Image (cartoon, rainbow, N blue to C red; front, side, top):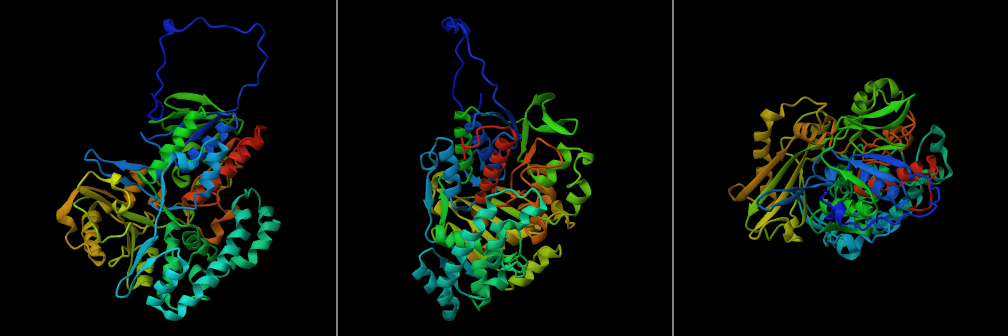
Length: 527
């Protein structure tokens, strides 16, 4: 029985005799869709395709839905987000729910945070980052009074930038000519592709610390603000303009709600069912092989990690555009060293989201980029208990500690390094006012880059997937329609449009639309 479905099948001898129609009309069989992976992209695609009338089977190798956005639960009653903790721009997901006959606000309780998060500049000020413009100007003035006047012009420009670039993010890029679309040409002057994110922010904010307040969000992509394309100033803009939300129960609660809606639409969710390979005939996908059986399908949507899964699901000979050598040579995001800590007692002085920016932030970034483990790392701490007591048993709270580190393309023996890096991370918590945390730990889990790869099937342990540099975006990123093998479609952070929950949801809309179009389904049913 599915964990999202409490229906009980009645005994056959308890059923009334069937009433058969005299002359049933011939009905077209629904299109069969196999979805590989119940991450946010796979769930969103499954919902939309089922709402369009397809017979959707979703195969998930783990015992829970959500992928990297799942909830980790412990016997003691602690709950942790595994990966994403920031829920941004719920509009896209709300539109997907509405297209499936559901309301996001009925399925998930979202709490808008204020402040969005606390930024601690080591050796400098602490600011409460807020979407209230006047208050945020006062916070910026703590860093640099001259920079406070740059906030409103920066917001206005990024409002125009997002409006200009949205049409680009909402469509597929299947061929090089798509790069010259009219929407792309209109957006280009605002994108300034020759500038990195920090250089673009310099036009509004002169103090490097102010720029970090609006540029550290490049870490959501696993990148540095000194290398990340200037387009991604829209990440921090989304926070300040549209808010940061916490789903009660954690981001995993959103995935569970998506699965619940999907099952109401008829999606067959099969947990603990890894897909071994995509079945192909004459170079075209005809289904998947899972659990020793072939499951026929008219289309296969892959939501597994691109770098990890594609070489396992499809033979190299069928992947002309993305053969093994190209996947191996691609550029990947950084990884993360994670601590999930169940703490006795409360932490009343700690904000919901806390970002500690190392005093020498540039050196910290250089160390990650060159494969060196940072010795004085920046870190991010989520204290969900500041908003949501359901994340821990009474009298306790839950901490999520993330330290950016190099991915596995840089050699590191994490079996040996993990204890040392744990001690370092706990020491760094002192800068957030948590000097005695170790004595209060009642549950602990560590995930290293090796763990991301081995336990969570993340290629190279690169937590944020393929890097988002200009040569790995749009047409140069794996496309939503995998043109090498007809019948295969992709969705997720490693594919177009990229990483981050709102962007992945948008990618699922693109992918579902392509499947409907290619299979001649009712394109408008869930659009």
